[in-house]
Image (cartoon, rainbow, N blue to C red; front, side, top):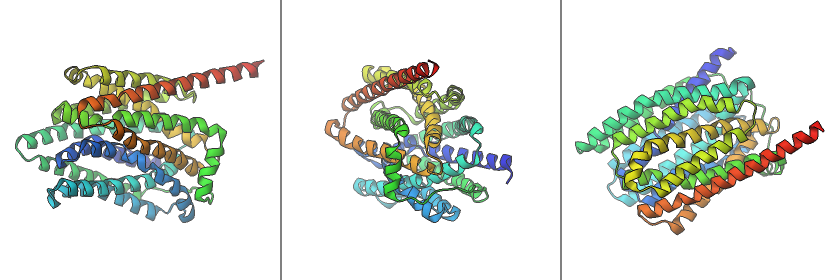
Length: 412
């Protein structure tokens, strides 16, 4: 195996995959769902659906430990994952009834989310097995930078296309072009993965029970679970209705929406290198605590400023959101894998995702009790992440102080 050559293949396929995810992102699919006529609550559930289906990952480790992470099976699953997203384009052609459209949308969205979760863990495991430890932070930063740069052009072009077709009364054609781009990128991505080396993955045979019990009993891993759970809860409830709020209640156009997505990608692309440097010594308080402050500022702004004021503040808010996201992405891509016991990395990653899924499943129930179809109710949901991020910040203060005290004791 040529390490340098395979490294480039993994980087290319990872860039294409994450770029496709961004092009067919929650933002644009939410815009498409609004076109289909889905309710605000349905759109909010869709916004956190991919995290909710993380619970499925608890079965991934036992399943793939039995089938040996077969490349053929994994790529078949990945193909279904991509096809499900493209098939959404046919929904408006099949029915004009909103209930039927909503049902078809969630069937495809659920297939997309589940197959995505099932395939996620294997690709991460293959990549982390192949790539040397000293190259991992650089790989994550490089991937994010290239991916975000590639997406910039697509975001602007799609904004212009959607705006032009919408003004002409042919909004659907704009979305069909979007889905066609997703299909082409997916086809190239799958072709590269077929010809990419699959490293030998040493996964111990494990049952669903052990897949839960072993990581759950690992005291050193609990900090990772607390961090992931609090982050997903805070970010999930905070962004559940953000796209709905911006598109439906602030009434911004597609070009402005695309410019916001460009700022998002620029922010993540340029900040990834910064967070990679901050995380080199694996002192995660340097990453998580600033992230909490960033998101607290974001959601306080969304809560307190009027709709007219927010239109002008949206570019800054979007930059800060992605800046905070980039910090957690670095943490998420590295700490779970490196905190796991040897040969049980798949189990640890899937269990952490399982906890995130359980936490996120509470969000629709929580929002349903306080949410009504208006912008003031949505703004109230921004109060919850402020509190949750404050709790996470305080938790890391205790972690940092504990680490300092232990260091002092060791020196004595």
